[in-house]
Image 1 (cartoon, helix red, strand yellow):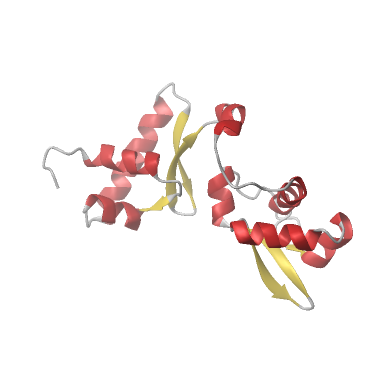
Image 2 (image 1 turned 180 degrees about the horizontal axis):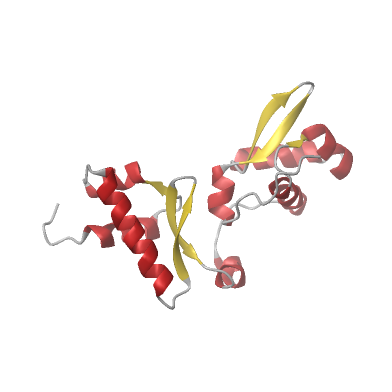
Length: 161
């Protein structure tokens, strides 16, 4: 690696370019720095730098992974410019509900949203935004880390129907 390279800026560049959040291990592989503590120190410095600047950007930590993202209200004002997976309106409504009601039961979702729920769940599983775990004769449905990263929206409720 070039000795003139600023590793903190390399981490910043990796966070900027990656479509997914990156772990300390990912960043170690990119920079070639073996010390996880040193990587974490540079991440904390970057987070502080962005937090102290008058900027629309921030370094966000989600489940011990990091990403460079937009702060609110900027993110919601320009989100339509980002390209991403096409999700049907019904699937998006279901996803919004599941994100607000952690570990929803699929049989309950079908009662609320109708038989098309099965198609919406299949679509959301294919995009990787939800996961299912067997619970008795039904399934528990919850959002994934990919959902959190993509929508910058962690689960806000632990309410279960």
